Image (cartoon, rainbow, N blue to C red):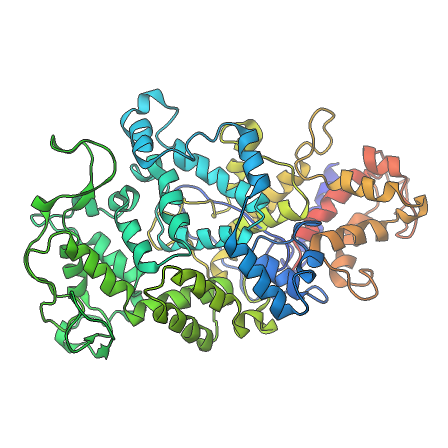
Length: 605
């Protein structure tokens, strides 16, 4: 056993480091996770070049980018081909169906089966009372966020609408909050449900306002402490730099009257009568935005007039009532004594600014197409964002424009992104038809979480407010790759030979079931690995898998001579006894060899 495992690791080393989930472009498999303070990768791997699998299909690309890979028999090549007469029609239909959503049957069944997801439907006030005020009666104040960390895996693995999960993930990353923040952790179910999922396909201005009024954000970025007596610019700065205009629209250490102006077709409130506003922002706009948001806080136990509900509270006594100047070239465009209206109006200015449209369009293109997307797709998506800024379904229209854009379907970008650890693991679970209901509190779930915790990409554990990186180079660290490999390794091996528990990923049972109905001489090493290659990658090259470089590398491992040297290397065209595969019989241990081979497939380019 020891020598056998060593040979597997030696083969991985021989795969040009590509094997360790390195350049997992957007092909059908991948995923992983991280620990609480997150650190930068220890070692960057550069100069890697993967040979693509033969004939990467349009369907495989779509299901990987807009979901978490192929689910054989449910969401695969056959399913995608049935959506229309050509790829453009199929893509459009897929996007429409996914965005529309519906009854997510298996997700709901598994949540009910787990029986211990207790916080999902609790109101904001109930969460605040149960997990912030009255924590002595609860398991932990972090129970809501802990449940959602695990629920994210369950949803991504079993959802019939994985694109909606992808979009929720994008917005969680855009309005990023560290999940274990003292106040955020107790109300996370509300943050996910009432803010992210409620607004993720709606109007961006409404979305921005919802984030600004939620206790998770108010505490995380310190606006609960922002008052006229003690201004705190932290939230105002991040609202501009991260959530709206983006740092690319920062004009440096200039005065407002030195910034170039641009015309916008807006009127009323803070909008200048001539329609001219700053094209970019400067530090003064950050300070003035923070002044607009003074008094926006949480109804907590700070002092007696408050009733400690955990809900949004506007404190007029803490608000800066003087006139203000935001993006107006230095002129005061916010009247004095407007109260809470200052906050609503500054968010309207930011949400309707053309720079915000460009910033978010760029983030979307880099997340879903390429680290270096063509400028045309950014410009086109920004136009849709801006032109529909008043529409209640603005963001739905933006996503449709992005996914139906020619750049999204351009083959030169199909393999331009590295899958992040979470994606690697989830797509492996989908491709192998995992039967693993992740619970908030059982042993297998805890073991899985501990392993994912080491990959650097665990849900909601990025501490800074800028969200997990989407740039591929960040994820090419030896730590992320090896820990992701170890997580997939554990998933495939756990309970695989148990007589009392079912395997989490039924690699061998599926193979046995498939070959039981075929003549015995069909169960050859070539046919066995070809069956799993086609299942994992949801395609079969013209002429079959034999001869493909990835296939040949894996079968070399698969046919390694047994530890007992008195037995020869098994011929690749010789049939394997079915009972030997099912029972992992000595001396070839086919059960173990097959699991190892599937691990290498998952780790292939």
